[in-house]
Image (cartoon, rainbow, N blue to C red; front, top):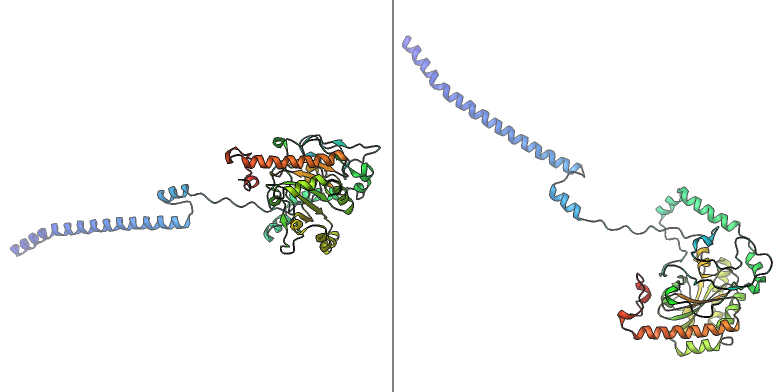
Length: 383
């Protein structure tokens, strides 16, 4: 018995190291598996966070995101201006023209037209697509503007300016020298000081292409005599400057230089009914002009605001105005109302001088030509 107990005790002692080693092995394997499990859990957690949160990313992704740039957003379309303003003089820099206007205080007594105190025109060069009067806003933008209080205040000011303006003021101002606003300058404005003629948008007399078009592509690269009128009375006034009977020297220059000089007529009528009548009798207008000049007669309905009128001296809607525009769309000379003999002669001499300027500019190398910074569309046709 004693020997049997001793053998059992020795056997237990022999088995104890193996159990300890096996336990150690099992504990090490369980710890390694738990470590692997924790690492796996951390990886799954990182992936979940990177997917769910847009701000958590790897360093490589962050570096790539810092290098990418988003495309600039397109300019938001705005509603065309109504054209009326309470004080259009405040929007024009320089000395205002002393002449009767359709707004403001009525001139009492006697008025004498004075020469232009400065070059007139817009401060920025014209671009096709400007002053069209077309509302290009989407339905979403119209809805946003409908609930915009600031837009309502702006519209309220425009309506106030329209309502407070006397309707017959322009007709009443015709008593002063038949509506003549100013006297034309004796010489052309200097090129470096001249301002720009605005872009206008309207239909022409062409039969093949009845879509409206811009005036800027037509005026670019040529010396143009632009006449603006809105009634038969005003058309007779501009005819005293540009008709063949009143100014034969002007037509001789246009006939001698057909690719460099031209006559452009702008019939502006903001009244829908009158504009419809003008389009109805478009056939009679075609008989008055040769077919090659049909694209130089514009029927404009909208786009001429009070700011444009004040800038280019178009101060009376019932009076005709004549402008001499160079090949860079700059106003170099302007006349109003009925032309005086010296004004008619000055217009013809000014057109001849502009033609010579275009020829001299074309004869120079491309690097020596007159360049207007940031105005590529104005001199691209001359390059």
